Image (cartoon, rainbow, N blue to C red; front, side, top):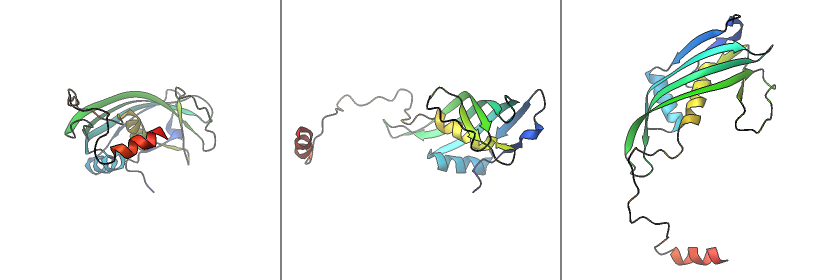
Length: 164
């Protein structure tokens, strides 16, 4: 299956000084990526990459991601637009060469196939990582009367279950 944003770059194009590549999604790709990431809309998505070899088969990609996203506020349930800007580094490695390092601070590794790295898919993955799982419109506040206390017909059952 072809990803929503497919931008393969042949890694043999990398010269001794690396390679700069720009990725920008068109209208159809924006709609498809928005559906995949379950956001209301994407009005723009671009990523500037700088690729360079850091080993015989490993390619480092430094990227700067920019996107305009419309999401639903978890507090007010209103749609709101915001900008996402994220700088990141990933390593493209041959399939099977990924390490099992559980350190969340370690550089992410993405396997490539047929000597080509898919910078479009890397862009979408980085956007997914940059999005807040609980998006909140600036200035959105919970009402003062909201509490964590459970009420209603099942409150007694929940309280009994908590005691058991």
